[in-house]
Length: 451
Image (cartoon, rainbow, N blue to C red; front, side, top):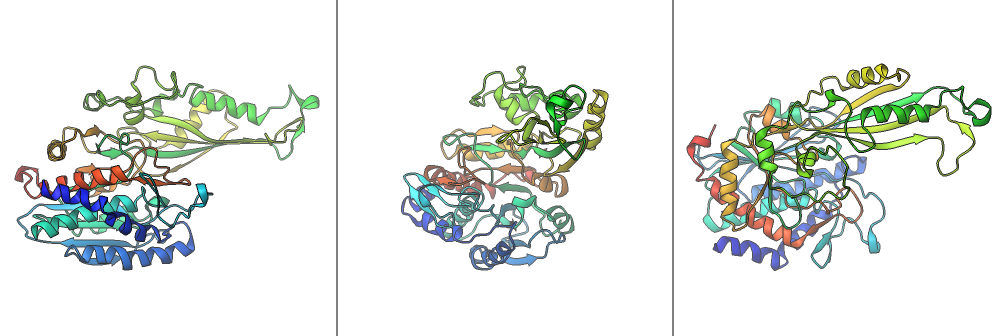
């Protein structure tokens, strides 16, 4: 209990804020050329010293994919007889993303009450700083961790983690561990500590009704000339109806596993729009246990300055968010055949996949261990089979064969990727306590859990 009090005091004293301010000051934007240099500085000047301070041997590794940046791995071995923990974080952030309120600089950490504003505070610098700090405080208090530690940092998560799959496949021995414990994404809500076990995957679907190079007068041609915008609207309605319900069975998971249903039974999600989504599912099941097909962009003509003409082209971008168990082997053919069968063969369909869906089974023994360890911190923890967004969780489950435990230190309203991204001070404080509770219990995890 003394160590947990020390963790609370570390945040209350302002020490954590000062450390986070230093991290935020590095504009580590992975989709900008100038950001690549800053990312390298962040690895050299921030993360490498943090890992060596934990007694880790630190190595940098080139990315097998030229689209991505380097990887940083820290390894501390206390004894081959002890369990090994793998942690993960990403050093990169998104760009500034527009104007911030009240003239805030995204690269300067500023406090407004309990809100700490700055790019990366929630995604992911604040989160990996919580875990690094928890490990440091544990090591300082006990003189040892009581387990072996491996910490992997990537530098391209915000651009889809290029090269991470290949790197993990080549470096299985380097990254070998008993379990992954990491932090990213949001809690269920600001007040509810959360443990999630995986992530939904994503497929971006572009529909293009490019029927002719020119627009034609709607009075002279209306009724005899196919309108690409009307055509596209009908095609979209054949994929997902006006109430958010997917109309293509092949784009749905085969079932909602009973273990997932049971895990979500007590999860309360505030659904702001009544009647949206599958009415046979609870809001929690729709968000964390099922697939959604969302229209991200829709374009035809000029809605700000419309003219009396039938446009020649209409386009839409949709996104399928899908859970583990969904067959997305050939979404392009599935959508194309579905549209053609309904009279829309003129629409060109292209797809682009991002993270793959994956999750650790709810009944995995590591899950029960983690819930028990977190309960020692004195507050119930919500369990989600996966969170709604995307993460490279499949790298750890499918390539490295690990159970994955994600302990997020953010909340849904953090505005990640948008102006005014922020970390809540109470969440950081509680997150540090929970991380210490989890890490301090790891060394005494039952041998039966080890690989």
